[in-house]
Image (cartoon, rainbow, N blue to C red; front, side, top):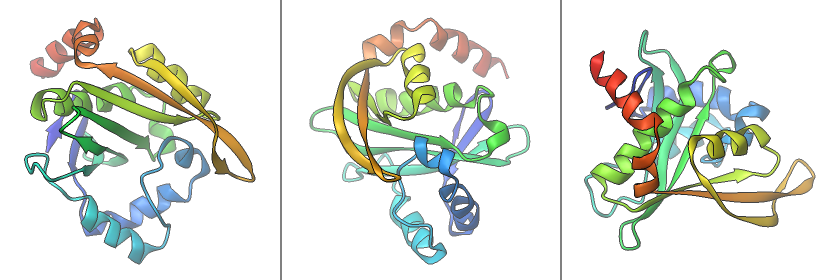
Amino acid sequence: MWNGRKIVLRPLMEGDAEVLQKWYVDKEFRLAYNEYASVDIESIKKEIASFCGDTKDPKVEKVVYLVQRKSDLRPIGVAGLRNIDRINGNVELVLGIGEKDMRLAGYGVDILIVLLDIAYYQLGLEKAYLRIYGNNDLGIRSAVSFGFISEGKMRRQVFMEGKYIDLWILGLLKGEYEALPIVPKWKKKCLAK
């Protein structure tokens, strides 16, 4: 389990399948989160079993967590690390807020900082990156305002809802993360709680 200021990340359990299914069928959620293969409940249960790795295992390439609101442990989203590349020192971050009333409430920053701490300080990686669909303007703006740097656009890379869209890659190096003014402020407030 990982704690942020406003959130807790815990491993997924089979009992989470129904809440995940609810989020997976939400069109807005799918713009931000693409770490699932099916909306079928049995398929989701199988996926949950495959997501439950331990970052301490050097063979693990992907871990996904349920995001809970810290105040009442209400499930609000999912977040994880995929394509963990220990040889080249990088990882892709994935996150999505499933509960509509929790979007734009500051949980995304909290999730990002916890994931980046795992990537840089537990896994010892040098770089984290996001892949964001071109039709997710809010996601791109949010990542850039946090400190991620655009590394490129894969033109017409994804076929979604009857049309091709671009896929943006945004990266953040460990040194860039450590230089962000929000990080020490966030950690100071997190430790004070």
